[in-house]
Length: 230
Image 1 (spheres, helix red, strand yellow):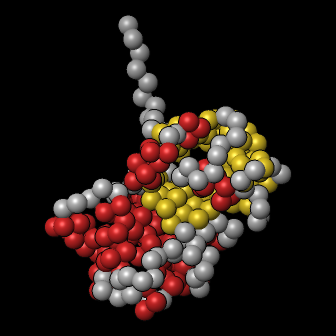
Image 2 (cartoon, rainbow, N blue to C red):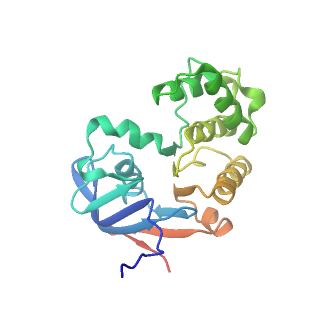
Image 3 (tube, rainbow, N blue to C red):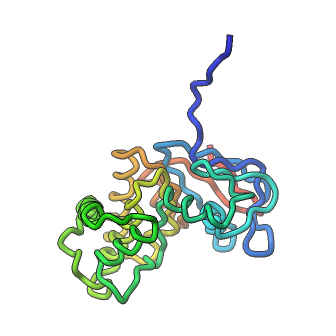
């Protein structure tokens, strides 16, 4: 009689993976599974490969040896035409917000939806309204990015990451450019999304106080390796 495993499928799986930073290997033999509802921190000094892991996951950096699977896509042999479809399943939040400065908040979000295949204007407007409401920024929809504080811009960036209801949010130093009070608001928002929606979050940070205050799994990058703290 065939047996069925109750073990859930990981959203992210690295197997003996060598992580590249453009040309050179920065991490050897990474093994990591990330499941729905996980909150995972990647910590370490500058240059230890933290951001390279994120870039590998969004198919921006090539994988060295081993395998990397995220949201059903094998990164080692992903085709260029499939990369946009992969990125629809992932939300990405950057340290420097990466908003388009020549258009309003709602136009920033509309641009992303149209770029990922949305066509119905009514559905687009409804989705933009929903994500702005979820990050407490409904009243800023018509503002230009330069009219917003750093914390407000990061909230818009988080709203952008939620547009396609991702299974995973990758956050690369999301509080790095913010003061401590503003950063705390962003972390409350992200950890709330993790708890309420079950969205897995992988967050790069160098700030130990973050993962002490908002506990999760912690991976440490050092000496060309990345291993989980027990």
